[in-house]
Image 1 (tube, rainbow, N blue to C red):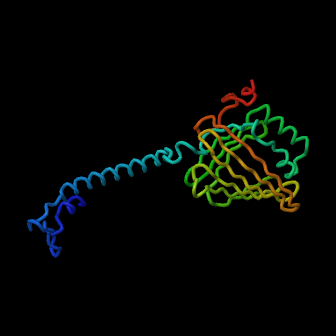
Image 2 (image 1 turned 30 degrees about the vertical axis):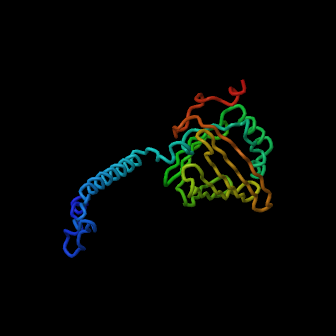
Image 3 (image 1 turned 90 degrees about the vertical axis):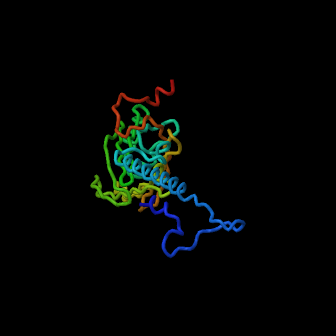
Length: 239
């Protein structure tokens, strides 16, 4: 329909102005509307095809172009050489010193890995380490609650409006042995193969606060957790 309409010269439509003329010869100026119509139709067809391909890619679960190079999606391993220990974080939560020491030793001996799948609507993370092995899924922008040892924790996961593929913020209110703690956790892909994490833990009663920085390196772009014998451990890197 668009092509048929554009093929009709404006002055051939009822009630439309007269055709332009060449003032030197007083002859009507030749119109290139047929060529323009053909080019416009080709452009329109290309746009429709591109839109259809984009919709199909999303339907098949394929990544958007903007997320294909730098993204949180994939498998990650903690870089213990660059990362802070979790000692201060765990102390605010009231974890005994013996357990803190065991957690620190475990991180050095056994790789800590994450597998992340971030979509337009949800955030899924699977975590595997010596101390923990779990998977959680959160709806973006919606607060959720879950039962934990000392009560209920509240979690809100939000993707950054300007960096939806690479930056998320997780806000958690968590009951601990030392009272209610507030955690502000940001996770950002700062390159194709590097993820940076910043955790700010605050005890709402004592106002004690500790900031922990963690760095992760990409193992693959697969979003499922891996077995213990896959990947390369930090200890092997030191050889």
